[in-house]
Image (cartoon, rainbow, N blue to C red):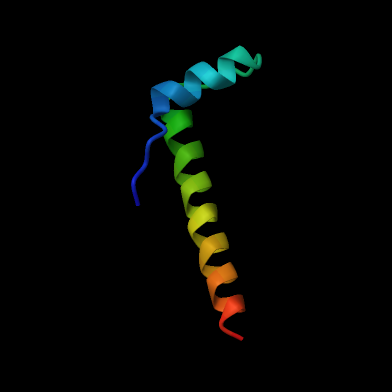
Length: 50
């Protein structure tokens, strides 16, 4: 999966919304988001096959 959002970008975007996270936190957040996206896409594609 091509991951275009970097942890640095996530830190910047979140800080603009008043949310302070470390670079390590941003890495963890992005890992969760990408994993949830993979699960969601898989579920949608599997559902379309029914």
